[in-house]
Length: 161
Image (cartoon, rainbow, N blue to C red; front, side):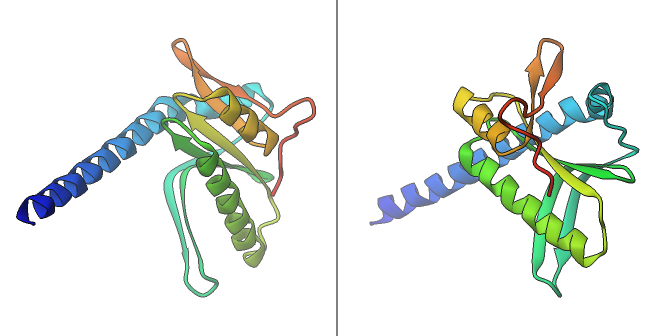
């Protein structure tokens, strides 16, 4: 019995360390892209004047709670960027939920700007990239010494919340 309990405790500690490491990789993605993110979006016709990292929304009155990795804004538009090491379908669906919460929060505060979303990742599987584009997200991924932003085009279009 003691051996099983010790093994369970070791597994919990290992899971915690893996979770911390995964979070660190996500932070590395942020540090890689944030310095040039505004310039890259500028090349696509966006003019973002402000950049915020690690923003939290805690609206107890309306029960709206979420975290934003990167928040780009100007007078007309907001781009919400979620960063992951290897985005999966659940991450993309969670970002959709985040966007819906932010839209609700914006409506409550008379914020009429258009909200757009992006997913940044170091490694994108083809199906995850297609799924993100299909859901209307911009996809940010490494390319050589820098990164590329793929907009949802063709039969896909940028979703505005």
